[in-house]
Length: 146
Figure 1 (cartoon, helix red, strand yellow):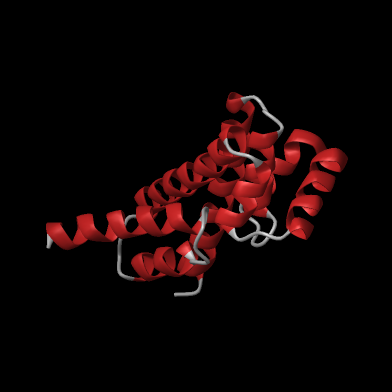
Figure 2 (cartoon, rainbow, N blue to C red):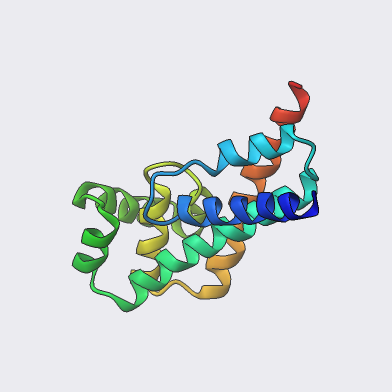
């Protein structure tokens, strides 16, 4: 049984990581399933947050080290997505990174942060705060409706 528990947490970590990078996955579905199967909500929120932040950090690194054209091609993101991300940065500044969890706009935001060479400490604080709150709220909603 312990083996399956470890696999559950590992599966969530991987799905949360991939959901923040190149694949259109939903870590929320995995998190919800594990919550409904009695896994620790605190541990699940921590694992999901860590995985998702690591995925965003990967996007940041790609934006920091690769050309924007290579990043767009590899992540299969349109010019329009990146323009929107740049506009959000211009309008809301660093605090737009709190919304790195939002589908469609989140991945480009984290890549643009790397391209713009946003300080890594601020990136980690703001991205982690946003992603943590999302998983806390989701967990609460899932467990309240059981």
